[in-house]
Image 1 (cartoon, rainbow, N blue to C red):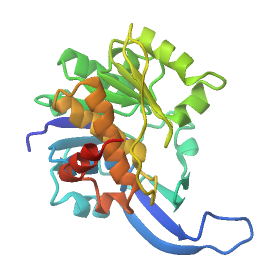
Image 2 (image 1 turned 90 degrees about the vertical axis):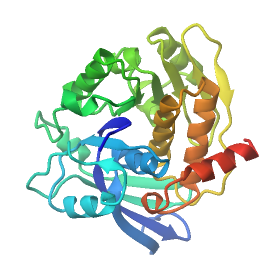
Image 3 (image 1 turned 120 degrees about the vertical axis):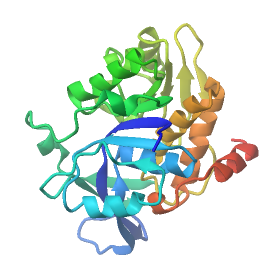
Image 4 (image 1 turned 180 degrees about the horizontal axis):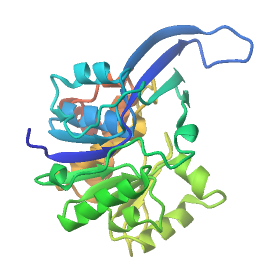
Length: 299
């Protein structure tokens, strides 16, 4: 399959549980309204969304174990997602567990353990997998391999989107778009305002920086520009799982279609707005028609 975009990063099996009547409370019973085991992770979800938007995608990243592989192959068998770069291995595979109730969710996993030593549980990117692609997306979590993808993108003049990449990183310096989440702000820029973080980001790249904050106002700017602001679309929230991953997918789509900065932020926000209005997202990803319909309503 000829790929339009190459995505490298987290590809998981996600066990999701949608609760009825509010989030978990200590020593209280909770009713599960729905539960699923579907592809997840920042890259897995973004690939699902891009395929729904009509993009041919090549996916690489996390090693896929025996508990995840059958589900993953079955799910993508009729979608425009090329799994050939993925490495299938013995062992259960990487999974996470997410409890959801409306605006609130709590992910659980073993990522601190997985990252606690130098064991590499992800692929080494291959140059040939990027050739011919018009855009890319890179999760920053996979150390030298994430940087390697960025180096290959620079070499072949492929614009890429990254997420939560630090202001002084190679990934941020050379990106076309860096989407910085509220979670990243809390972890790495504690005590700093969004405007202060944006100033740091602007100094260190010619690319577009977008700072998101869930249902709050988004900030976006490039080097030497005044900060621009945009409100997210007003939608009824069913689950926020995959909202940021869908936003990233929207940015990749925008790169492929040469959108302006304002068009990019609005398009990505509309994609995310559609995503949070349904559950489970992998079975009901936003379509281009739905995104355009929401864009036409305004925000």
